[in-house]
Image (tube, rainbow, N blue to C red; front, side, top):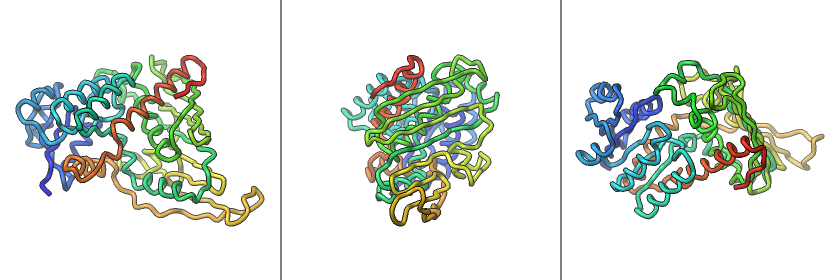
Length: 346
């Protein structure tokens, strides 16, 4: 089929990665750059595409087949609503919005207009996640009872200087920028989260936003989960450093970031180490151990190809606006739980 023309709005760190993947895509091409900052015209010139300073300008002069919205979080909802009003499918970088109220407005507008809105939870396109979901849904682990997760890594100081330093302020910390990916992953693997408890700390960097958080989740199926997050940790137990998918990170293939346990076995992700009882479940019985085969690729590139298929009408969104909204609601509940010390129900 004819390749689709996709514009990228916002060319910060993630926006530039989307540009790179579009240049490699088989079913899509880079149509334009939308960026009010000084770097936009330079990037547009480098890749020989048109540069616009606003979405409205792009949509008025040369509407593309689709738009990737990689602007700062606070601009996501307004940008998505602009795309929906123009009838242009949009892939919104996570989170869908600053808060659930704005995210709900996006979802309802998109559903009423019949315009596809996808959310950039790109790990759902990972072959690791796809295989993990298959194993869990096959029943090989038995009914799920527990999950243990971590996102422990250390962001360098210069990370917080990009874009005027907005990542040092509330809404720019690891809960909204990083944890929301893991929440989306855990719900994909285990099911809906219904209760949240949490504590946060900014004791290391002393920014107005958190640098470390610990959580307890209760899932709708009765499983319980714990999760620890920190962007000041000298540790490799995060998705980027364990999955071996993003080559810009050093790889630690013996580390895991998720461990999912059922009554008959457990799966560690992303090493894909599987342990199962062959007979009667008992702590005195040995497990049958194996490592599930996975072809590790680039989820961001897979996401682009999927977005193109959605634009062409060949697929339904794998991560819809409503999926992104559900992840945001869990994160908001976690933030409320940390502020109040209470168990927050969804």
